[in-house]
Amino acid sequence: MRLTTRSEYALIAVIDLAVAADEGPVSTRDIADRREIPLKFLEQIMHALRQEGIVTSIRGAHGGFVLSKDAREITVLDVVEAVEGPLTPTVCDAAKEGTSSGGCSKQSSCAAAHVWIKASAALRDEFSSITLDQLATNQKSFDVNVQH
Image (cartoon, one colour):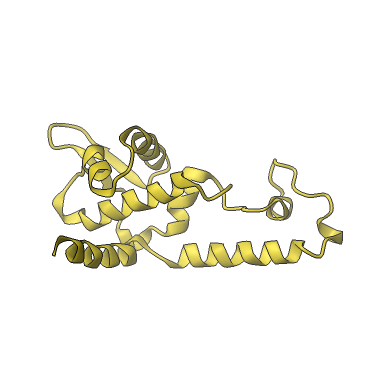
């Protein structure tokens, strides 16, 4: 898994949903317009987030998307892994995790392997320690400042 624009946009979109949680469903178009995300790309991302249980789609004239659970229960790691797959940023991690990508056969004799594994663990720890609720609180402050 690599961190891509897909995970960046997914996180921005779910933060938008967390900010608007009290307002009901939010349309993909509204998120795309407000956060400057290409609509077609966002539709694909929202589909993946829905499949992974991060968001729920609501049909109808006033439909859109809502978070599937409380924003305090969803972490950055949940969102990133929903759209990118398991967070194993290096070949060393893939070998450690025993993933199907095969990993690196030189891990046991490579001085760099420890660095990559340690960095990956730090990234996982950071991503799993931050919730959407925390980010939504920050986003509300930014949004108020932009409007003034």
